[in-house]
Length: 162
Image (cartoon, rainbow, N blue to C red; front, top):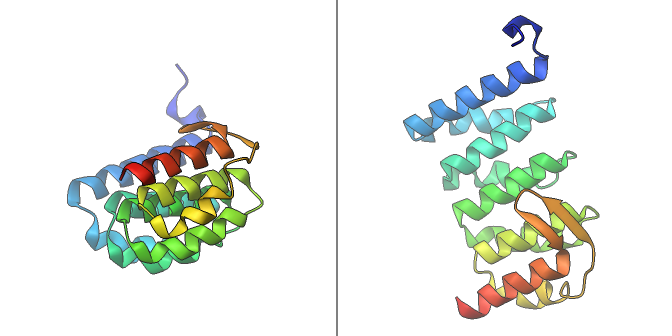
């Protein structure tokens, strides 16, 4: 086994972030929201990614402005984590911004936006979601391994039964 000193910097960064996430989870995290919101503007994308993810774990409405702003981040993982966090918070005010992401150039973002709209029971977005039923772009992510069209159909199915 390699010594801790010989491990790559990325390993150390992930370990620190996991420790911070564990601390946030143990405390409920609400008091960490201001610090995490500030971290959302850090120049390092890994910090912004972790901050968006942590705000999703806390899932408190005070994080909404920072998460909505993060939907325009240049890093796709920051945007994905912000989308997931918005879905966890469950605020209907996020729906119009998520609908705009359906036009994103990155199919991974489109897939995440569709999923979030489903999680938010965004019946108002049904027509927007239906427009993607035939989209054959394939997405491979931990929670998806299907076409955008299949994701859209799953979301529509859930919206009709909800």
